[in-house]
Length: 195
Image 1 (spheres, rainbow, N blue to C red):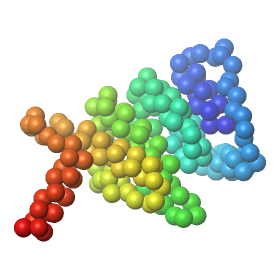
Image 2: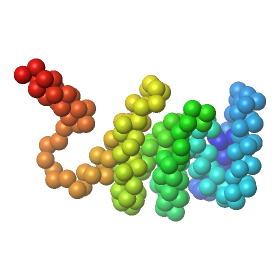
Image 3: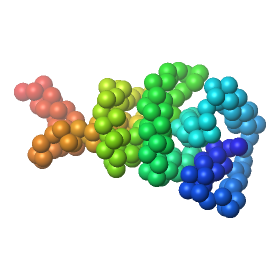
Image 4: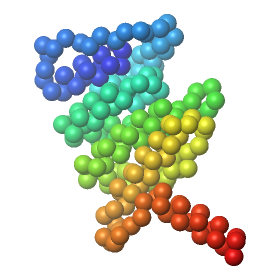
């Protein structure tokens, strides 16, 4: 099954809706079919449940345009606390994957950070769990692998997560955005070098 089919099927299973037909995927080339089959074999050997397979596929590099599936996963996670904790655990583990030229992981990083960001906005238990892994997320605030817009999105997502998990620890004083803070530090450094 393609990722979209599995995500749709799993969401319908969690919601108890079984009479809706599966969504069809089109334009699947041989490379992606081979990659999908290898991924299925890998997950079968590892003994993952169907739910865990769906989470792993959604947060993987398998499909680059699967943000709709990440949205479905976020929705499903809010409906089932058990799924939320498992998906959050997998998303945090996905951030540990080694990024190389042969196997780039920037799409996986972005999907995982996006998932973490959205669940932290609503769930306090997710926020507490993410606080334990703030060092891992902090590294992505400086991510730069020449992926243009995706690099920027990764940095923005990680910065947003860090601000979200630290908002309860900070007093309610007026704060600057990270962008403004960076600009002001840059301007201060340039004024010091001129003066």
